[in-house]
Length: 172
Image (cartoon, rainbow, N blue to C red; front, side):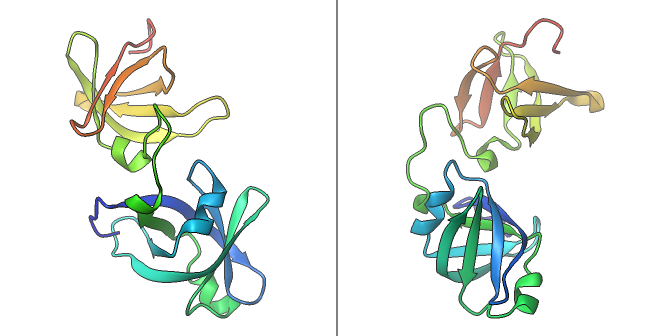
């Protein structure tokens, strides 16, 4: 996707659905129902320019979202969209709950210890059943895995691109 900080990744197209050009989306939002409020999405692979599509219909299906997009009317057209990221304008997502953040805002964030020493930057966010885990890349190629829990993450300042953690002994 082009570098547009007003867009947030809301899902990933994981497959086609049916014969009328619908796609199955793995939502990355806090609620799949949010897709009902979106009027348009931008589809693209990371690092590539995204294309805009108007949403004809969005509906939840189990833990997925089924999207019907204007201009996509066949299985063959839908198949070309598989594995594309789904982005939406940030202002369409509404307010986040307290202590929740968009993944796009956390990637590349600098991570410090309580003594204000730089540990590294968040290079990936891993999903686990219990909680997210931040992968932190430090100087010299070292990497650390830090659980995204309140006992460890003490402060997040998106505007300053800064996180303060108090790592559990032996974690770093």
